[in-house]
Length: 386
Image (cartoon, rainbow, N blue to C red; front, top):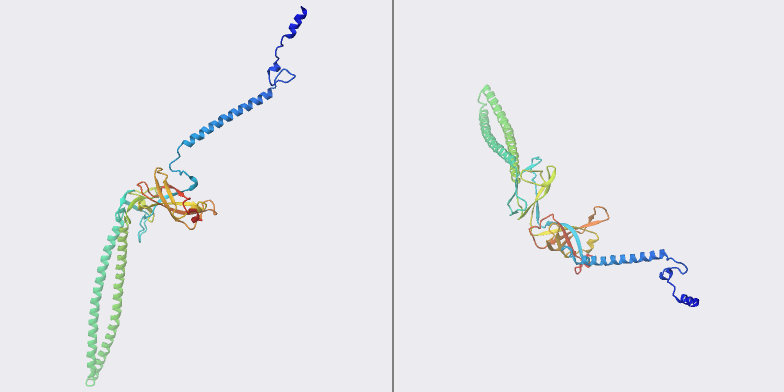
């Protein structure tokens, strides 16, 4: 019996140990390696996180590609060059406050003013300044001129009367001299006393004629000088009167062309702003423009690198920053042959470039910020520019 029990005990399987159940256990020990397990867990976590980030990035990229871009941005940026500038009218006239002749006026007061944006014909009234002083000066000078004209006529009449009187006296003296000459012919038959009287009368008549002739010329010169002085005063007053009349006319400014009124920003009352009726403007200050809105253009400044890709006739598209929905076709019309120094370095150059605008719109006005997309891949553009 003891032997059978021993056999049974020997044949029964032994329970599995902990070392055999764990793959990371050592061969001669009972516990696993904690460092290796942690490394494997960290690597697995990093791979999973990287996979999640990759999938999220792809989804975000795909969603961004599906978003439509702005209408003003060209589809192919590699074939277009964007330049920034401002709009301006091809035909425009600047209106300046008048500078009056012969007067020193610090300011001029506006009494009438055409509103900004109004359409005017050539010859229509743009602005009227206060001209009461000029009209009053013209009236005063006109009265002085009329007075001096009458004085010249009166002085000339006096001279004519004095000349006639002097000529009469001279004629009488010459006749008296002729009479004394006749008396001298009979002195041989007269007594000695009568002869001496006749000689005395003859000498006196000669002296009188000589004196009258001499004073006659002096009187004529003096009278001519007096008349000339009055004529100079008359002419000077006339010029002053005409200046006052011209100054009064300058206070009324009419439109030189058919176009639209655009008020400029000027310095007034300690700040910048547009002029209004009642404001005061210094002479010579440009405060208004009259532009022809049917022909507009954009002037931009291109740097020396972008300038190499520009050529006359290149097509372009003009966008207004104030009105993004507007787009106008255009063409490169003018390129400055000489550049000017940059704002930050003397080695950099900028070139003035003008683009024409095809088409028109009521909102297209001067001094608007604009962006111009130039088709630099236009056939022959790069070769012609270089």
